Length: 109
Image (cartoon, rainbow, N blue to C red):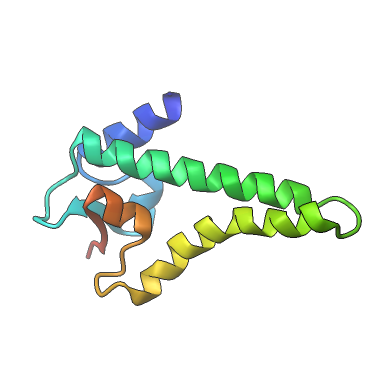
């Protein structure tokens, strides 16, 4: 809840977290304004879900040996990898979580 409060507040009030300011990135809607709380919630929820799936998958893979469950754990990595890979195929460079929230990350000059 505290994580969403931080990210949600930063995204809805200027579109930038502290890290995004350092990298000169801003989260916006297609109209160029800061997202609303609903868009921030969608982006945050999908992002956290993908990160948790990836952490669980990597946790299974960190054990010794390779078994069938270990290979199945690779499937837990697939959604997060697809989310990042989609950036290469989208004309605006959006990830799947940005598409779901109707958002885009833009470079600030």
